[in-house]
Image (tube, rainbow over all chains, first blue to last red; front, side, top):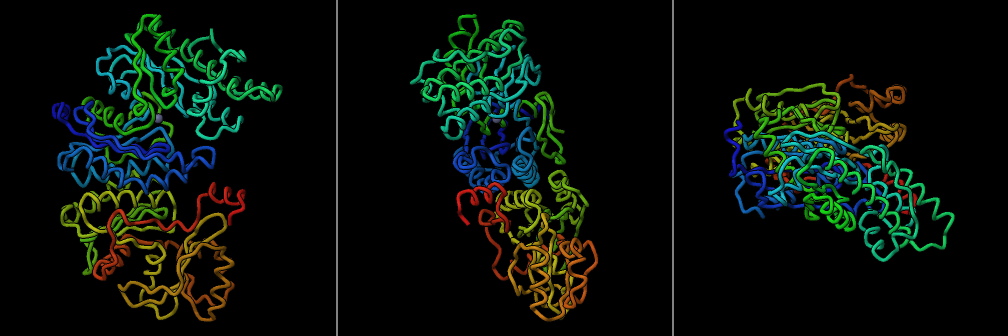
Length: 341
Length: 234
Ligand SMILES: [Zn+2]
């Protein structure tokens, strides 16, 4: 199989792990011919978070239109597709199953290999898609609503998790603080926006575990924000948001750069929805460069969930491990280094 | 050739056939591993029957009511296959397929599936004879078993009762004088029944394009119900 995977191998990938229904056609692992994302943010906003059953229903509805657009926009005939991939985990089980079931069926109909992809591994490839000049070893900061991880990427398929959150994910902390301040859902973009108008030094919120290994913790910070607002109701939201964001970004930058120094990384890559945050992008670039690291910032479209990164990871997996069995299911708690069978 | 896909209940079933009958079938008591089982089962049935993908003229799929996650696995598979092959889908209601177990009775048939949370999905039928798609007397609904028992009592006629909804709440129905036959356990919708009904939908032009298929949930997501209660919408 590995000999057949090359620069002209075309992969159709589906992503349905959380609240984006996405399909993409990628050639040779890095040439993105199309990347269609249908977001459910509006559907979930009134619930203040992603509701699994609502998400699963929306994925099934969006599936065919999204796949159709991906193929049309790529300007190819379905016969040109060499393999079909889908996110197999981690994620919401009912949501994942929609994509896995569809991708396996297409693989069967077209008689082409199927690849079940690890969503976390795909996020690592998102950075590489936008900057193919990156050299291993890399340190990747993967920050989203569900994950906060500092990863040592030694080579394709070779990772070590150096640090992770011991409680809330960074994006989760944003959502909870935004909810408390009545700013709506999702919290990341709105806090990012109003923080730019506030004073980041208005409150010195705690930087938990700052000098303590590479793990991070955001639960105490969230509580500190809530307590501070209770005691100081007159304080402006913009200053609270700016000070909260400053604390989150300070911890993420410090730990990521320390991790890069420890493993002798060639560069630092951001990934996941929170890496679209403007302060995180500017601070990581400034502080990372100061410490002598190349810092790669994927485009916003590559930070959030998309299927191009799934196709890219699938191409590398197909090359190294061959196809996944058609008995593949969905694995809601799949770990980073694990590969669906 | 029509491919029948059943994933809306605990078991997974796949069958292949046409109006003349079933060519190949397989089923698995899968206990919620529908997605793992389905694709290899489709592959197996096609190989057994010696049928190629391009020989399929339609896909008959159970659109519910049933297990939400299970039926989406079947729908995602059926819709992708039908889209890729450019063939139509015969969307079959799970309860219609359950009623087919008694296709030769002259009595009214009630089909009910366990909907969990103390409720059943059900519909009533007049049968049209062996191998014939049943005629619905009432549309599929979700209700308490007691409401179904009241409906059956109001019909004031003998009724053949079939499906997991009656098995689950047999205590409610055994006492009812209207129930003529309380069908034995295991009368689930079968993939064969989907093919049988699907082939009749195909000839009467009721098959639809892959993108036009909608699942029959009959029940809103919990979060939706809670939100509506909170917002005072009923
Ligand atoms: Zn993600």
